[in-house]
Image 1 (cartoon, rainbow, N blue to C red):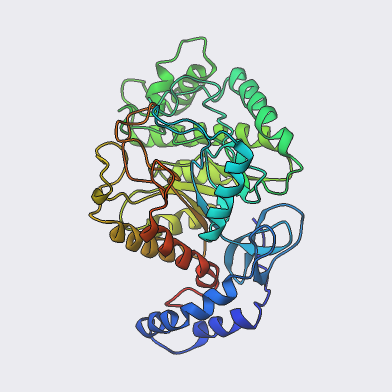
Image 2: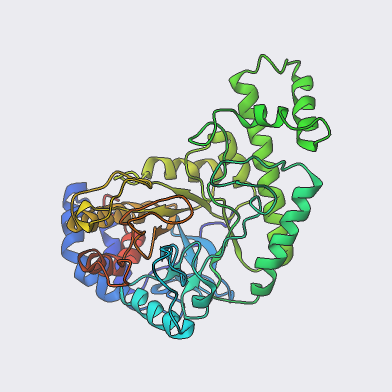
Length: 429
């Protein structure tokens, strides 16, 4: 963990930061911040070529990294300027709907789409974005799929991988060499997601703990042997498992997964961040503590109307690492889409989506430990359901035909422009 760096903001940041030391009440600070928003946004619009905010400096290393500056976590751009990751997931060249075809000219699509996202003050391509747009001038975060390359149906059905096995080690190295090694010198790589929404116990995909899952593995499996030795050392029978047995073993599993995945990535690419495995649900303190020893950033998903600020604050407290809200979204019924499959309860209108976005990300920016947010996703899903799993929701910043949801994107443009200033000086401090 990096030590806090006491660096001063430019005059713009200094004027806003004076709110911290004032005796003004929290409610009045909110009012002052609202009055200062146009001021904040005018300064927030000054960025380096990577999207780093020129008002507050970090250390120039030539690659994205993390630093604590004035007791707040930041990403730092390759040019040494603070960077708050404002991203969109699934900026995809290949449409999810079978009724649509990919654009004829990938280079033209990438150029125009990147210009569009920058115009809305986004600076990052989130998970599952198409490689065709990686060179278009936005930071990007590839998926390595370490566990997914070692097992079947790991995300969709919650398949459990033997993380203690030599086969997992080999799969991790193959995945990292394929995804990370060719990008080791690319300054536009924000970092790597190791996997997506792995199963850490009972969830919508299964009811058993990972200890129970490992005890169901073949007797020759390394994971089975690890689980039985664990129980023997505790004098515990497999048919009388206690909650503390399950939790402690889960921590061992999480530590092995995070260690193997992170070390494989760093062997292939020592220059970039490991952004974690994109938790779909809170997996428990044992898992968070374990992965915090290896991941640079803890990535977390939430589709609730209000952001999980207490949860994210606790994760940073447990690990000493910053957090990234790597999936969230709002979908509205006035879109004409069914919104019957996919996370989150729908809101009524596009204005509700815009208000939801604004309140959500401003609350995230106020957290000292949060370094970014990635909206899910670029395109709406097809009304007939995407091929993978039938999701049919109004998650997009653009419609299926590519036309923007203008109420939403106008609010995104305005709010994104002031996010760095909000993170530097949150209301209520």
